[in-house]
Image (cartoon, rainbow, N blue to C red; front, side, top):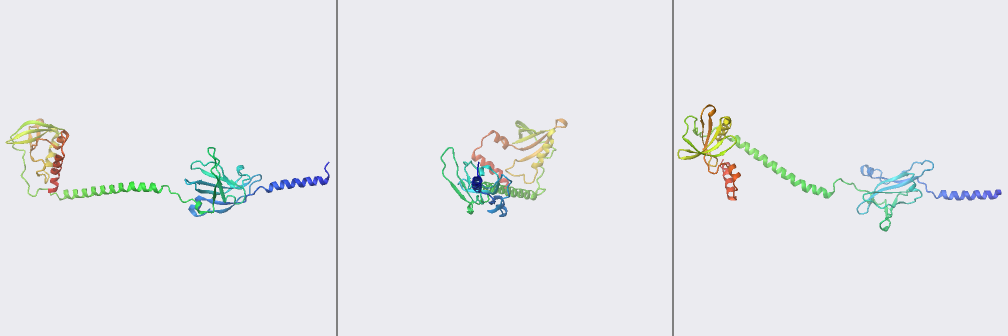
Length: 323
């Protein structure tokens, strides 16, 4: 049987033991607070003091830090503040992250005690190699505050500028050249007189057929055939249109009768004739004869030399220069 004195002594010892153990549990009422988004946008939430809410019975408050290491190992803080009841944070007087850092992963640590998250530490425990030591971070340094991150890096922006600017300049030059070309072309055609200053007599009235003898067919196309023919002492070309292609015959006449078409570097137009009647009618277009045929057919069948190409370009351009 315990005496009253012994019972009092036992109760005193139990009180001392439990009181001492409970006093070792650090309580958390305040934590350092930081919010990267708010700090960057409105300059609020930048290293302030957060009062933690009273936890429920059997639960505890903690402080935490959430950050990310850059390629140089420098931490950029994302969040700081109060954290409610996590068994991993129990009895942790210091904020320490022990995980090995994955690529681009967020780091996290928590602790117990007022403002215990002011300082934080990363002590990675690697399964592949021995730990390289402790890395201590202090939040009082302004260098830990993340700088605003743009979506495009400076190098990427330079590449875009160097790529797009020449393309844009080239497009502007092409558009300007085309515009000037169109303006000059329209001005030229607007200046063309509706009639020749000194009109020539009609090259060939339809009355009175010329003594033309067809010799051989030289080409056959969609709208007719081209013949080599003899007209008196001259060799001429005769393009014969069937009756169903009369409109093409009329259109080509109109082209040759346009002002300024009488030029030495343009196919010489002699005249037109209608041969036959009714369904047997044919429509002739008579021009000068060139042994090598049309430029289109010649280029299809032959390879031209550089000298020949320059000669062709010269004769094509001479008309525009003279006009």
